[in-house]
Image (tube, rainbow, N blue to C red; front, side, top):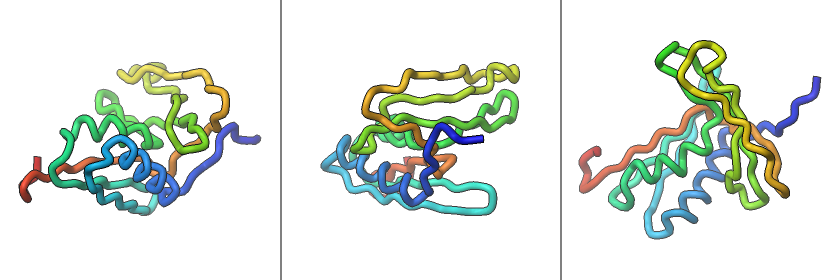
Length: 135
């Protein structure tokens, strides 16, 4: 059986995420670290000052290869469509609704000039610090 997507490593995903953050927030310095462990991987984004964490999460969350539905204690996977610059242009996921969960399926049409990928990090977390204090 052949896959209809390209699988990226956690490090490749972190590189794309770092570039996306730089494009979206050019005046903010981010620390983007990847962590690979048994049965998974994640990326941690840290920064001081700058935009609200929710704005950064909107950009960073597009590069997560999985999500979690706490209503039914279930992880689900998603792939993305990226262009030649690594910008996310859409997603594809079965969600959890078919398993009585709360996350609907997403099947964006593949935009021209994109490739379908699975990001090597299941989760991306964002931590904003303001004057040394966590927010």
